[in-house]
Every structure is written in structure tokens, then in C-alpha cells.
Image (cartoon, rainbow, N blue to C red):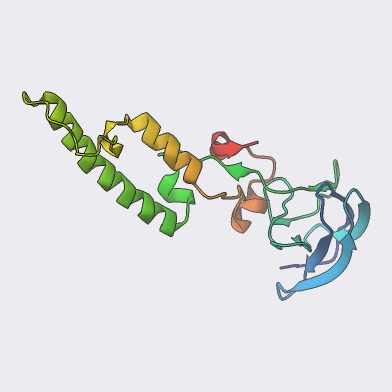
Length: 189
């Protein structure tokens, strides 16, 4: 939400997406106040105040599919580079380390079921390989999931992972301006 209107400044919004973007000022009650629709490739100079946050929506499809420096809310700068480059968010890359932290619960639960099946079949495959009888795995001769190494299973999960945008939370958007983020290695550029 906006606070005082004492320190005047401006923001140069630059739309580097392929869609029109609607600009909103977050007023004194924290509500969106529509300002301008910025067409693809266009730049708009918006007069504002240092303590007035701004947000933006994609007008085609997913309204939240636009960011400035991985943020959905920005605060104008008093001096220096005042450009706000509107882009599509980069996507998080799936890894076992960020699986539960960033990916949807439904995907996490489905993956857990998949891994339980894999472990059961992997155990059966290893037992078969160590048995002395070397009997056929099944009558049809098909290969089961258990024959694959875990690296292949992880690659299957990575390819099945939904796209999850890399967006900084609003609380961090102003507090971490200019600070590096430890999650940068989880981003697909």
C-alpha cells in the first residue's frame, strides 16, 4: 500500500512481453488502481512517489504472468536507473532439493506415489538379479520400471514437472531490492 506523497519520482515501464500489460498503482488502502495499458515493445514514463508501489497484469491469458526483476510489486527508486522492464517470469528448474518447497502439492503427492512404485519394482528387480534361478520377470518379456537407475527416474520427474514461475514474495520485493537471491541456481533462463 502507498504511504506519503512527499518524494516525487518516476518509473520508466518498458513492456518486453508479447502481450499488452495493464499498470496499477497500489493506493493507500492497498487496492489496485488501474492506470495505463502498455502495448508490447512500448515504454511509458509514469510520475509517482517513492513510497507508492506498482503492480501489473498481463492482459492476454494469465494476468500474473509478468514481472519486473522477479517481482510482482515494485517500489519506484528516488534516483539512479528507474527502468522497470516488464517480462515473463523465468521458470524454476525442478530438482530433488526444491521439489517440496516450490512445486504444487498435487505434483509432489503424485511424484511420491510414483517413487513408491519405483522403489518396490526396483527392489524386486535387484532381488531377481541376485537370485540363482534367473527366472523371467514376466510372461510378456516387457521391461519394468525397476530396471532403470534413479538418475533416469529423476529425469522423468524433471520432464513431468509443471512450470513454476520464479517470483519473489511481496514481502521480499522491496526489502531485497538489489540483493542477490540464493535460489538463482534453481531458475531456467
